[in-house]
Each structure stands twice: as C-alpha cells, then as structure tokens.
Length: 174
Image 1: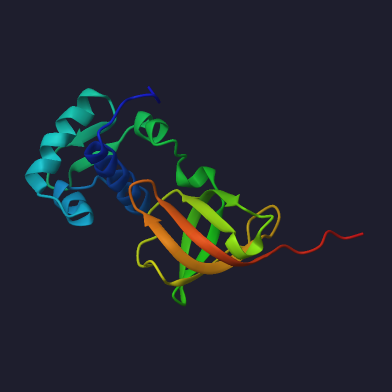
Image 2: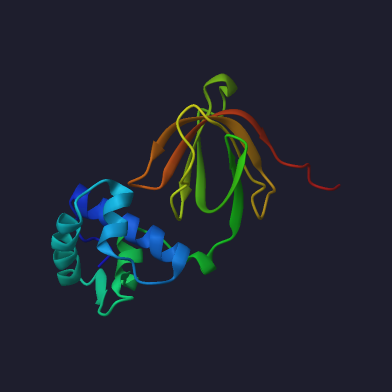
C-alpha cells in the first residue's frame, strides 16, 4: 500500500490529518484540516471519501467524531508513529518547538559556506518561517547540533531546508 499514487491535494490533506492526529490522538474534523491547509471544509470531506476508499482514513461518527489516519496512511507518507521516534528540539526564531526528526540530510558538506541540511520531520514545525534563525538538536545518538537560517518550509512533506552556519557534535572520548 505504500506505493499509492496520491494527488498533491490528497497528500496535503493526509499530511495535515496525520500531523493533527499525532498532536491530539483524537479524530480530526474536516473544519480543522481545512483551516490548516486553507481549503473549504466541503472539499476536504469530498477528498476524505477517496482517501477512505484507499484505506488511508477512517471516519469516526458522532459529535466528537471526525477522521483518523490508518496504519496505511503512515506507510504512504513514509512516517512512523511518534512513539517510535526520539524527539529532537527545534528552536525557531527563539521559540522552542519539540518535534520528531526522521532524518537530517546534508548537501555540500565539503563546502561549508554552501552547506544546507534537509530536515525531515514527523509533524509540522508550525510557527517558524523562512528567514528565521533555527537550531536543531542535540540528536539522540551523536548529539549533533546544527544552527543556521531557515531557507525553505515544505509543509506538504514536513521538511525544512536550513542554510547551515554551524554543525557540531562532541568529540568521542579517548
């Protein structure tokens, strides 16, 4: 199921649903998803029908109802549930935001003046914007900390691109 072809709109809706569900662990209403991605709630409900057909979403009836992602939804988005990952601190524009980082990919590390990091998150980073100073870390295994300026926020893929000014990890004991 992890190879389901989703439209860009379906992927944005599913990502918003998973992000909100992971924050609250409760069914998410179409209105909330619509607010998150700036769409009409009716359009969200229509798309949810196709996502149900793909077994990516379950409808939860009742006043406290809404939509809940299935395990297939996590697979399609190549995401793990939050309790399967370690939390890494993200500081953006001097605010601390606890996020779950899947991976950090570096480009051009041999050229420090052009080094960027692609930071893949398990949820939306929320309140940070392009141009904000950011610091990420320390990571669980290597205690890596990176700092720089946020160049790109890709909400659809929950990815940040950081112009890295500093990347440090403590030296291993001898």
